Image 1 (cartoon, rainbow, N blue to C red):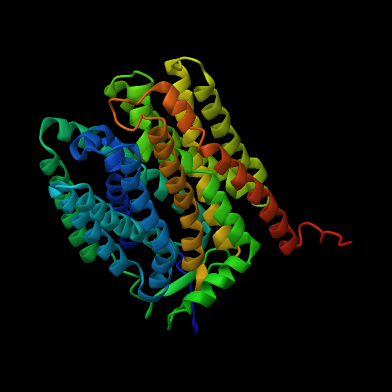
Image 2 (cartoon, rainbow, N blue to C red):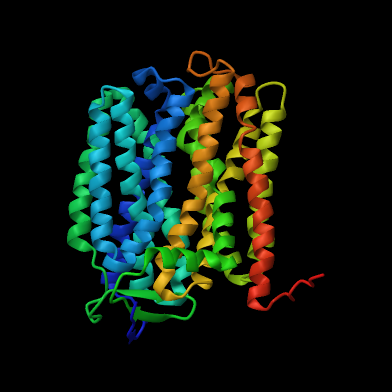
Length: 442
């Protein structure tokens, strides 16, 4: 890796905002693709005659591919820039939805989820890179939060219009329409997005902590870059922060929320969709609040923001599953609001990754961080499905409140493990930064 210094972007013009807008719109569609199965999970179970473990496998495969692709995507972004990566990502997602539209069997449907996971993996890190390249460094945290907030609107698209289209038409028409939208966005991204401002002669990486912009002239050594990123406790803190905060909300939205609310809690699909919509809207509201608090408390983010967000989720989750009967509707709304803190809190992990890594491994460290939440989510989704099956409640006809109570114990150990490592790596990071003294050795 060799570098040559450049002047950082100081005043983004209309073209920067246009490129960011198209990138964010692509991210909205990526979120729609990601959550499309969760919005129609019961319909998918009926179409493929799938038990709970098999239904969970759809989401697990998708998330496993997404998480596994994060580091390679980071390396490719450091080499080739955002434009080709987003374009290929949109094309893969369009192909995945087209395969899903015509899938005659579970095996073909799983292939569709593989394509979706691979395409989805490319979009968010590439949009973060556009923010870094086209906007001044001091705007980075705010722009990242707004990118995440707007992207969550894709969940609403999957939840309401997509489900309505499915119930008004057919499976093939619904997922074929999403595939067509993906093709249109592939063309739009290729035409509008550019890797860098025209005054820059090469693609760059940006240290958003210092604002220094440097040219990338060769690919990093993948192994060296990953080891170097992971060696810093700040990267490990970022990983565990992202591992612990968003996974329960992801599992709820991506697959198990609608079955739990309808089959176990006895709500109508419309009422359940309303609760999940509150989750999405609350996350969009919490985003700028947590982003601003993160900016004001740079050395206390874990104790003041990340761990409290986990605590609120854990408390609401345990109260709901501990009740002997169906939860009152107001408590289910509170659960949705509590889970909504996870997404904005997880963005703090990217602040850690930016702060503690030099420019030449920024995308690689971001990939390591982004994998954390999706590893936790795929574990939670799979364990919930497995526990339902082991109780003989693996199909929509056999779902029950008691079975979901047991299955929803699965996330609790993940929260505990994540919190333990957050505390450990926070201490190591503060020692590395000189904020805390070295521990005394006996």
